Image (tube, one colour):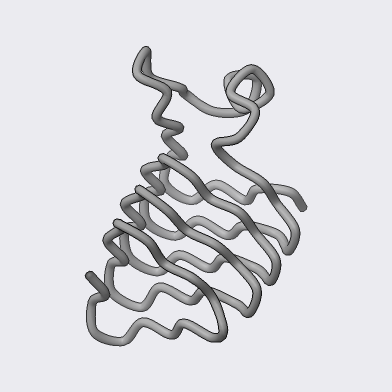
Length: 93
């Protein structure tokens, strides 16, 4: 499901919800995730099983949701393996 004002360029979105004004750059893969509003995901990113709050920016080439031990050092990871990124976070810069 993709909300109005979102911009998806040459990316794959699977079983996910994209909030308003989400911007997904080319070559990214988003799966089983909830992306809230005003999120910018750079080119070539992989996002799996994540909840990303508003106003988050993710640098090109960033991988989230594949190595949960690494993700737990930077973000909250639920017992079920869902990565949660809080509002206003800049990832990979």
